[in-house]
Every structure is written in structure tokens, then in C-alpha cells.
Image 1 (tube, helix red, strand yellow):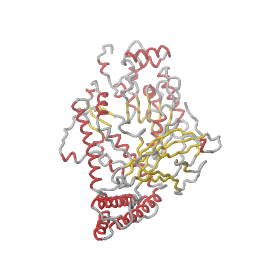
Image 2 (cartoon, rainbow, N blue to C red):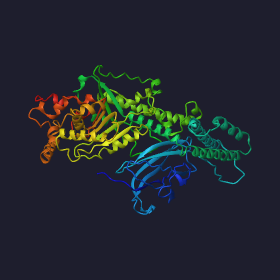
Image 3 (cartoon, rainbow, N blue to C red):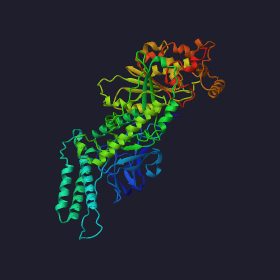
Image 4 (tube, rainbow, N blue to C red):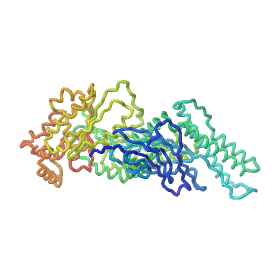
Length: 639
């Protein structure tokens, strides 16, 4: 079902209560970012909830700029540990209202909610940006940027003068607080220095020397007859400097069109690294195609390991969409190389040197919660924080190696993770050419599907290719309510739809790719093998991506599933089910799928990616993950 959307939207920030913070205060900050239109309703704060400006969505696929900023002040308990890391939990809600009603905040209804956790460390700056996706009938994506830092740590007098003598415990406690304030200042200064070329105006800053200033405070305490007064003045002075410094950072960065893309690039890089941590790959010879795999057992071993629990998290973490121990996916890629020998697992070496030098892109992930400092700039960090980060990284790498050993001992998998190769990768945004060739991506649904079934995949493509012009997207609807018919007829419908679509443009797209689900993958193969497609379609074919497509048919599913297929075939009088079951002809060699396999349709594409999930029991696993003759097929003499 396609939903026509023309309502009024706003976004609301709802801080969640926590025992970690004594008080939480949210205020709207007018940064005058030049966003222009004030919207249907202006931004505001009501009952402790930050409400963005309300904007009206006029066109489908429209992108609107909110540009609203809110300041959240958090107060820790007086006995809080300033060396610890705290998570601030915030609900980000999407609200909408019918545009035909008078604008009033009380008439809005909540459409979707995402709960995010913002990582806050008193010693370092948190500067991060990310996309936040909502559950919605249409594509809803919000870009969220966070700058968080400690701004003050003021002493509290319990008694009036005269002050008692200062013992060693009190002295160390207050020096630690001063050190934390200096570290926070240094973190902000190094962030500004690293990105100073991105600011529109010249920025001059003299970074503080943490060790020098801390030694100065220590000497004053030793020589002064009133050490409590020195500590109080030092805390007030450092807090004032830190507060001013953070305010200047906010004015520089919030609303800046140069800093936000840099932070978003860091988020994209982090997501890539996270994907590589649960992305296994191995290589086989073509002779190993008939071997059975044990994906269910591999999944069981991975799910029971502590490796998944220790995966690092982004500073702006959303448990419902981000990878965590409760939400993760396992990807196993099997490469069958035509002219290569079988994959040989390299021997592992567990020397101390190897353990202390992990080749993982996540070895610095603990620091990604902090400001982005170089190795030289981070020399002033306290040894305790460095040790904690190093221990966390070491535990993560050790758990990963234990998992690989467990898989190897059970002879379930002999391969590597992509993260072990990621040290060779250099992440960079793609260079945009002035004349980017147009690229049409066609999304084809499966059995009993609709054109909206793959809209989420189209939306993901839009996010990934946001900076690359020339992409066109077509959600195929030509076979809506026709998927029980002959696959050849559906292939003709798809060809006619694509031809009509590209005829709208003065210049046809240089490339055409397909993303197909289930039966749609077979329909695409049938379409590109048509003679009428040879002239205008085949030369432009670029990529084929199928998801759970029954490329080998439904002849070797379980008995229960087979009974259901026979019932549906009888009930719907389905020609497509007969073709997928290889029962459309008396002779197997005359069946549709066999004749389709002889046309070598995959060879028309430059890139082919077949994706399958073990839980999709309707189709035999190797018919979706790998295109080859399955083990059951080899044992069937009728074939």
C-alpha cells in the first residue's frame, strides 16, 4: 500500500530520567544558522521536552532542514567519579499532524520513537553525528549531531573558615578534579585545531599544556599556607575557562556546513568497521561446491561467545538499529575461485607481540567516543584512561581470537574476518566526477508482493549514494497481483515497464542494476535473457543483487513446505509455482528453470551478489547463497 504523505512534522527530544544525574535541564538555543523558514510552528521547550520547528511536507521524497539546536545541562552527584563514562538516554520522537487542521502542538500524534544513548566522558569531548532512521510507512531519516563536554567541576565547602589541614587523600582527590578539567580543555582545543581548516574564518588557539599547568597547581599547594583557597580558586578558574571554550566550540561548529560532513564520514567509517567485525569470508575450489555447510552451527557458536558482547558502540548509540549483543547479523561469504587453489588457513601466533598489536580497525574504537586526537596529541592523557582503553581493546581482540579457535576446533569454518584485512583499507568518500554517468536501480518484488516491499532498500541506497549524483530508482509495479502467472509473462511486463521508464529521459541511463527479492530474482533473469532485451538492456547491465531468490527452484524443500506449495499451486492455479517446482514440463530438460540456466544470464552482469538467510526455509539454502548443483540434486538419479 502506498501512503500519500502531506502532513506537518516535528521532532521531539525527551530526556529519560536516570539515577546518574541529579538534574536534567533542556533549553532551545538560537544559533542563527541561517536555516531560513521558521516553519508552521517555531521550536520550543514544553514540560522538559525539546520540540523542533514544525515543517510541512509538500512533495514525496522531500528533504527538509530543521537546523534546531537544544542545550541539555546535566548535573552529576557531588561524589560522582570523574574518570568514569556515563550514558545519557534520550528519546527522539517523530510527530505528525494533518495539514488541514489548524497548527497546534496538542493536535500532533507520535508516529515513531528511537531511544539513543549518548556516551559522555568528563575527560574528553564527545563530537559525533549520525543518521537516525524511524519506523514509518515512508522513509524517515534524521541527521543528529551531538557535542558534549564537562563544563565545570566546582568545590563545595562543608564548613566556614578556618580550614582544616589538608590530608593526602583530599589533596589527590582535588588534583584529580583539576586534571580532569585540564583534560577536557585539551580535548576541545585539539578538536578545534584538527578541524580549523574547515571553519570559514581564521581560528587561533594556544593549546594548554596539561602537565605544566598541573605541576603549577601542585607547587602552589605545597608552598601556600592556604591550600584550600588555592584549590577553590583553581577549580573556579579552570571551570570558567572550560565553559568559555565549550561555548566557543558550539558557536563554531553548530550549524556549520563544513564540520557536519566530516563527522558523518566518521560515522560511515565506523559502520563499515562494525560490519567487517561479523563478516566472515573464506575461499574454496570449484570442486568444493557440493560440500554441505553448517551455518546454523556457526551462528550458534558466535551467539554464545563474548565476542559479540564486546563489540564497541558509537557515541550516539541506538539499540533498535545499531549492532549490539541483542541486535546483530552474521555474514558468511564463500568465494569459489576458478583458477585458484583451495583456501589455506594461515597459522596463528599468540606471541605477546601479536597480542599487543591487533590488526583490527576497531583497536582505537574506545577512543572514538572521545575527541579525535592524534597519537602525539594524546600523550597528555592520564595513564589510567590509557590503560582502561588498552585493556578493553585487548579483551575484544582476545575474544575474537577465541571465537575463531572455537570455530576451527569444531571444523565449522576456516577463514577470516574482513576486519583483519581492514588495516589495508583507506576509507574515503568517493570522488565525484563532473559528468557522473546515470545509473538506474530497479527493485523487483517477490511472490504476492507490492512495489513498496523494497522501498526500505531504496531508502538505504539513497543514504549511501547521497553525495553521488546520477542515481535513479524504480520500484517495479508491473507484476502487482500477477505473481501467480507465467514467469515469462512477468518478465515481459518488467521489460515493458523499464523501457517505458527510461523513455521519459532524453538520454537513457548508462547503467542498469537490479535488486530483487524472492521470485523477483528469477523474473529478472528471465527478462534479461529475452531477445528483445539484447539491444537496449543487456549492454547497460551492471549489477544483480538477489535476496532469498529460489534460483534452483523448489523441488528439494522439506515435506511440510512441499505440501504447502502443492496446496497453493492447486488453489491459485499458479503457473509460476509449477515452474519453480520444475513440474511445468514432463521432461526435466524442458522445464523453465533448466532452460533458463542454460542461457547463462548471470554472465550479462558485471557484478552478481546472491544473498540468502538460513531462516528462509521455503527455499533450499544453497539455492540462494550459491549458484551451483546442490548435494541433494547430485543424489537424485532422475536428474
